[in-house]
Image 1 (spheres, rainbow, N blue to C red):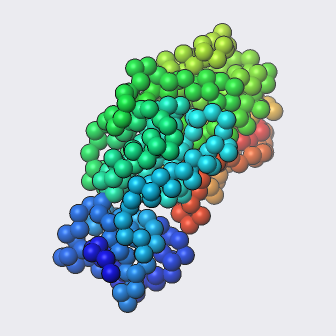
Image 2: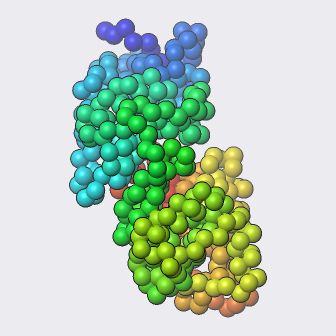
Image 3: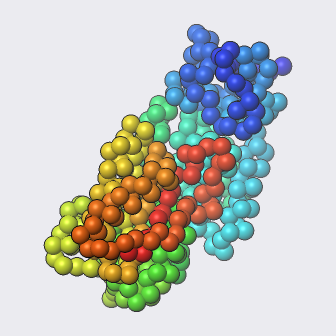
Length: 400
């Protein structure tokens, strides 16, 4: 027996999906009566099937669309320090097998057994995004276990995630342990040095997920002129220069991001081949075409144009438009890399939008396209086998 509150599936809901590993329970799948609705967000609860058979230990949030997040088996009734330590130790073991230096995503939410939690590591500093109410409630325990397992000195909380609002959480960043870095942190990846702003940048400060796609693009970049659109802190551009590109132009709407990219180019020893251009991506692509510019390698890595199912149609049109504007800038025989981090746009839909856009962009030239590579997030961003949303990143490389 346990004193934990109970969430119960409706009679018509098949419990096998939970038994076989699906990590979410939606509000419309549960009997939400007065008692269950009164459960405080982030509380632990026992999930039962309609016959009152325990299914799992879940983190409850009756006011959220995801009303239950599976944490463990039903016979686990508390989250002890050992519980957090064991899961973080398992997550660290994978990353240390993959990478020689401590710069990576340490915890990728459900796939690492921490529903709604992101932890990125930058040497002796870690940044936590607690995007679920249970994680906010257990933030002190997570922080203590994180320090014990990894030896990091500084732990920061990043509260900018869109999901926090859906969970009813605040948007206040915080220093949970140690101190916040006073300057951007240099991060070595793919032969380049990136500058990560851990307190004022996007998300946790850097996008580790694109690491293998940066590497693939760098392999295409030797002796090429490169255009990196939605460059952020120089993601593809700096990797391309490290791979032997003759020049790279980074385009972004954020001057602070471009400043970090410029500093990264300097630290990477490629400043003489690197340039930036601030502006709207669509307008800049149009302007570059009007100026008669062309490149052997063009990469477009936009933010999520389709962050939800409601935004899917508009997002796919935006991806198609990017492909249409970018394709004519690629020299004959050159390469175009198009990326999407929208989990609502699956690979097939994204690929179809890109191919349609390329076709429209090249239709008067007689040129054709070859899809030569499909890339995904790096292995420090594992995919939960039953949660398609965890496999959000797609990268398509075309030869035009």
